[in-house]
Length: 125
Image (cartoon, rainbow, N blue to C red; front, side, top):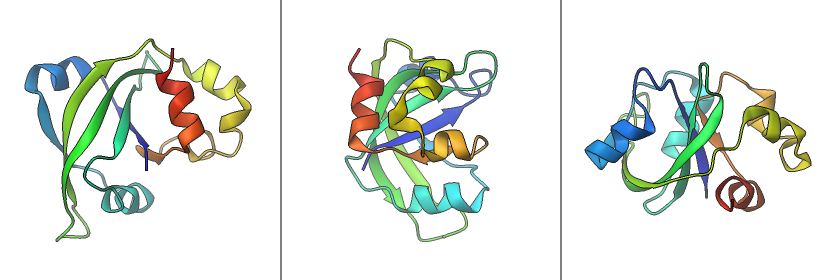
């Protein structure tokens, strides 16, 4: 299942992930986002989204491993993928594929499940 991961670029950007090649995605506290992290599987495809002033997709990544032994603090290791042609929040809001998406309904949710169609839209430019 594909997911979208939100990050503040001043905290940890896609460029940081490209430099590091892999990182542990943790520090999530929202119960719904935690549930989404625990649901990830090795090989799941992910889209990185920059919040703050950017509000756009910036790159791809994938899940290397999931350690959900501590359900309150799952540790998901991800590896860098490729940069994306950015898709802005305005473009996402205008696309009917996202009309019922938690990305728009729960704006502060940092780990968002995507449908295959949503993932294709975000990654196929």
